[in-house]
Image (cartoon, rainbow, N blue to C red):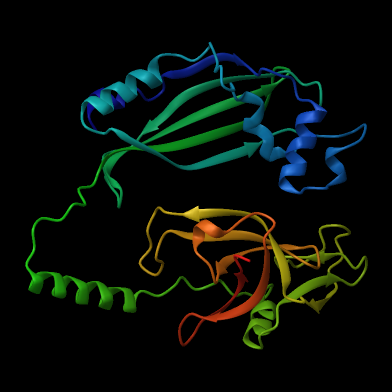
Length: 312
């Protein structure tokens, strides 16, 4: 790694930052409504905030924070001056050390934790920059949030002039590569074997707790509501609606043809599952749109439950 980049590791990105609002019930309620989370742990006199809200309490909103240091901006200026002009968020990690409760005052410190050696990716060549934020509640460490981005120089994709013969050869090569590309295999284990056995029979099976009758999906060894380990199954009717969705553009995978829609489908039985939407273009998928279960034969070994939508 270039010494100039290495020198940014350990430099503060924000010091003595302060959340714009204390932990509060309205924000918790809005979050739970958006996520569809009805856990009683997040309401009532002893309520806590959902752990995954950790970063929400530190966000600066449209006006930003005044306690941000210049180190992060200096690093970006250095990388952009060297030709790494594009940026994409890659992943985040969170660690929860104590529950957050309404009334807690949130403070935080952030540091540039690491700058990777130069990496070559499908998007281009660049550097992964990881920032770690330590979040305190009333002065006590409550959790950490690591956020990683790739600052990169876009790969050159524009092809030069080609002859008709070269075009045919390239098309044949691409077709062979796509034919050989296998869709990733699902992980089948003792906890979800019954689900995949049902798929083979063109049945979408949902677990039902033998004690409290709560339905659950995906399949789990025990009930989230009462911890009972006994269960049976019910077969889904196949009716559902699109609860949420994203359109995948990047990163490209050989077995997929982006852009395509990936949706969270709410089944008529009340549980939700992630699946593809078929039968209409990706840009016609809408939240609330009714969909219907069907089974898609991907290859000789793999069949998957998907949901067909309709523009009408």
